[in-house]
Image 1: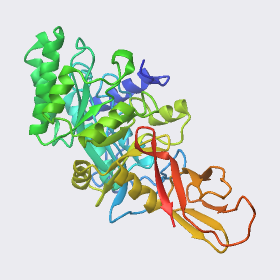
Image 2: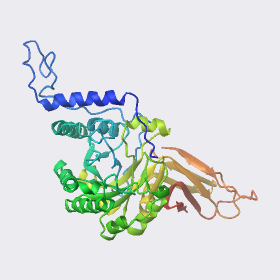
Image 3: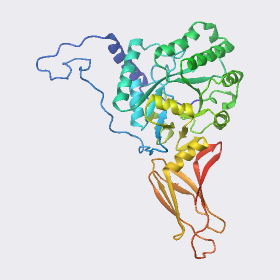
Image 4: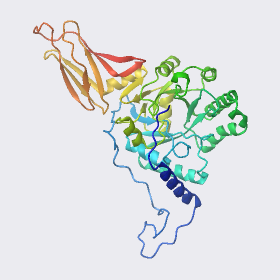
Length: 426
């Protein structure tokens, strides 16, 4: 069963948000300001905001753990992104879009996609006018914090279709794009009771998303499958044969912390973009506490700048690394770019010393492999911004300068299923 926690008092929070949203949607005019009211301040009892109100920059990222600062590498910014998140606009979500964006900023992300369900699991309790206000304010919070908000939706075959298939459509222009895709379901309700029709409609949804210019991502392909194992069903084969998926979510941290190696291998085989997400439904801090981890799942994106257009270009080019619990999964060239761009390794032959310095907020676990005749060192923990020295000692204790090369095996960086990245230090 999918591991999702629910906060106590969720119903009260949900009701409060609905009440606030209804007030927003009502569009009532505020009372006239009194003569003693200061400029820019709401009148007594006023429920609106002053005309010159602006959203503040959030000045305390991150509340959990240390910031995952990563230097620019190879002319790219390394952006921390999460492309799969739900709000109370999904029937199974518990926070507002504004909260979700704020959480992204507070947990050190650079960009976040909101991908609510808008079909059979959409929350019908939220008026559309309230929904529009939610997103207007979410965008304002993102803009005030130089944060990139990405509009998306999680598409799904209806409940009677088994095994389930979920996919994200990212970089949609507006809710009309989403509504068009779900109108395909509304036109023929018989698909709810006929699994094959549900799959057929899902394929049409993905085709429509691609036609609208969306980036399409197959989500958690092992979830609620026979044996919790990813398998290529006839419907998935149709979608892959038509090249309707641009990437696969190989890490979904809300379901399990581990990577799905079958999905990882398929990305490498087909040249699909590698994605890691949280798929968060409740408070991100509840998720972090329940899993006892310091940071959320995410995708590292090598982009030219922090903008939706630059992130989209990087996703299309496949310049990504999926991250879960400080394990990194990606194409060999992307993992190499990250590791060589954040670890400085130098050998001093005269001093028989290997020096390691971490330029980033990412921790690494390393094996140091030396030539025959040298003492095998213990594994090395290279913490965020840490510095470590390793003695290069001969087994026979003979004097003389170190000769040969050193190989570093990065135990928490993977270039293929169960295959670690390694590099040589001369």
